[in-house]
Image (cartoon, rainbow, N blue to C red; front, side):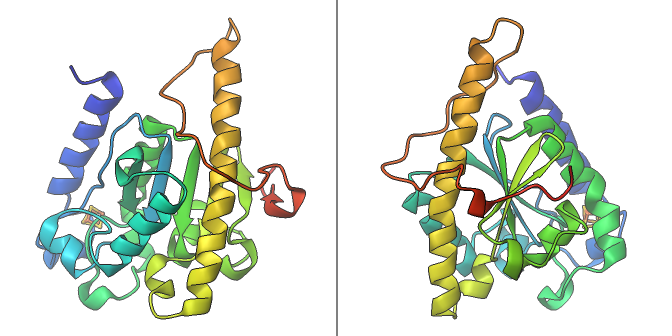
Amino acid sequence: MPSIADSALAVVHEHILACTACPLHLRRIQAVPGTGEASARIMVVGEGPGETEDRLGKPFVGAAGNVLTRLLESIGLRREDTFITNVVKCRPPGNRDPEPAEVEACSQFLDAQVEIIRPDVILVLGRHALARLLPGSPGITQVHGRQVVRGDRLYVPLYHPAAALYNGSLMRTLEEDMLRVRGYLDAAGEERRRAAAAPSEEARGPAVPAAASAPAATDPRHQLSLFD
Ligand code: SF4
């Protein structure tokens, strides 16, 4: 039987599939709400669907998606452990950047997904997702691989896998940043277990899968708190 969160997420996705709130609906094959369970502890947010995603109705299923899958697996995660979505849910024509008005029109859906899932960590892929989720942040070249705390949410900006596809040095940076993500996830899971053990606080969701090895999540060089 689906949980209340699963049902709420399904309602949001029905609205996305029928949405005509911005011009991106005119040339889409279909909207791409996202994949994963409402119980996912890790959320991955990219920019927008590409040609393959538009055709198949799933995010990150092309070449960049293969990179994302490999990166997740490198730290002991499966795609199924995550909820994967984009800033805009419909493909910008020719894979152009989404317009600010389109991002704004679609923001209600991403906000709703984050609110329902309440993930431990949000992986922010690329500069468009960074601008949408962490407005006012320094650029991706400055914050990639670091923890950014805003309110009660933890974000980790990363280079977009598509940008790293044909750039070996960027790929190595992305791989190193993912190792840091493993440490952050372990720390977040431990924090949640502590909260669950406290009698006055509510537990939610399964623990984050364990890592074989990870750098210390509390290394101050990799923490930012830009919005406190
Ligand atoms: Fe609606 Fe978002 Fe698609 Fe625009 S991109 S039509 S706001 S679902």
